[in-house]
Length: 415
Image 1 (cartoon, one colour):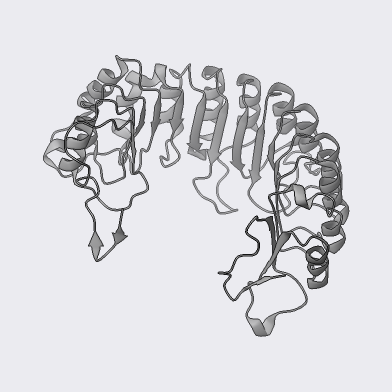
Image 2 (tube, helix red, strand yellow):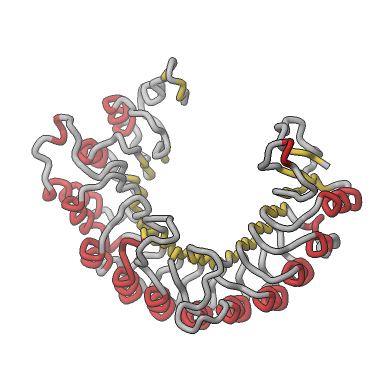
């Protein structure tokens, strides 16, 4: 695909004529409109097509015509979930769209829905015909409210993967917990990323998920506040958890009820969930939380830390205790050279280390580069040249069979 303004290639029309063996066609991220006539013709001559994801320029009326030509459709990305201006959208009502989804549901193959960009809520009931068969539902671009979500999610008994915005509120998560007993993956993303945004989901919703969805294996949960009790509930009920990513928006937020650090909650996660391979921490965390991580998170491979810890001891606990750690990302933590140098024995086993907004010095980073010549050590500057100090803005260290890169921009220094 050529996305240059002066030369736009009609890539859909470029497919050769005649029947195809195409099984998957996805262009959700393509920003330009495509020729719908060419798209419809391509879909019609691809009888094996099972995955179709269209971009926001494809209207509901057009989607309805595409669905009529995809009898084996299992995964559908809807694009814009609203009528457009074309002839296929004139007079389009909910019943017609419901009939299109009902036809897809009769084959029991349609198990995944996503897209819903720029949606009109009145058309949402049209997908109820396939809800009982769905194993994956992605509302990441759809600010659906509890009133719209509750009647639908109550039919999704086979759902294994759910992505929603926090606009579903705690009520939506409680309804999910009551119905979706097979849920394995849950992402709750923020409708508004500002730290002072209204609180829409909280410990109440997370606790409900913990108690109702005990097969949960992965969660990404954005919220304004959290409690140790809710995190402990997740650890005690969802012991198959492999990925736990909690983002409490705002820095150094303690337990919302007790005012205590979130140490015991994260301690319970790493203690009770022995299969945990990925962890993202947030909230007020002292060195004790990292002592727990180093002691119990023996399967951990990816760790993200921000605005946490009291001293270099926290980083030492991680680097000396998590023997399988491959990816470590640290932002705005009080860790310096002593913490960095405590990982010399392990860095060759890691894929990368990223540290920004910490207390590293140029001398400390040079020492790592001197002692580990097979690691690539990059220092990335966010300041003009004449304002630089001995401090290090960003350290990015990684393994590379090719050695240091040759295309580093001026603000990147390779030691």
